[in-house]
Amino acid sequence: MSSKRAYVSPLREQAAAQTRALILQRAAELFADRGYGLVTVADIAAAAGVASKTVFASVGSKGDILDRIVGQGVAASGYEQAMRQVLALRTPEAVLEALARGTRAGNEKQFTVHEAIRKALPVHEDGEVLWERATAAYRDALRAAARHLHTLTPPPPCPVEETADLLWFWFGPTGWRTMVVENGWSWDRTEDFLRHTAVTTLC
Image (cartoon, rainbow, N blue to C red; front, side, top):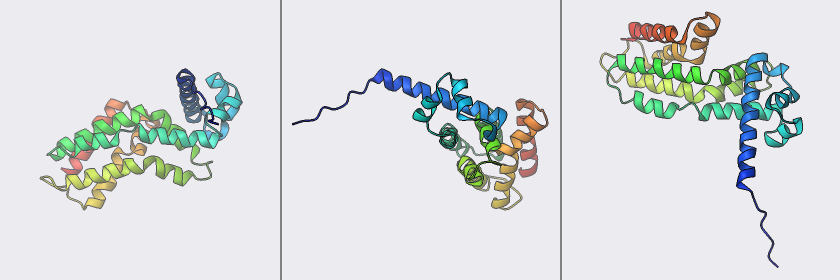
């Protein structure tokens, strides 16, 4: 006797996916605004306009939600495509200009996600691992840019490892946040400043 396969409604799946996306968006906003430790699942549910049991059924616990936010942030970063373009450039100035423009776009677009993760670090049981996961691909991309710079003419005046450290200092998420959030600079002004500083130092 053959068993009947359960029917899966495409419309229901689409609605479930939209609900998940909304929950994650509202959770990221709340984590970025209040801090991970001060937000409850009930808060997330209220912000998304659903019941708490829907949050648990759709995305899981608060920890699961943060984990998904990190995963989405990494997937949406677009570092691989951006780096292919950077590595095709043949002058140091062009590479540094592209890094300034590209990292600005990524940090500006992913600002809420970065803030949600950053504010979770002091209270999350695996905060260090979480930050490493969120930034590993980003840092690897800047290391690749540093190696590429050392194949161009003129190469940077410091070793490759130091060049990579400087790129992370200028173009990593902390550098952008320091200038835009803590110092109140505009994204445009920060991009111009970081690009100019990098070119002056490395070219």
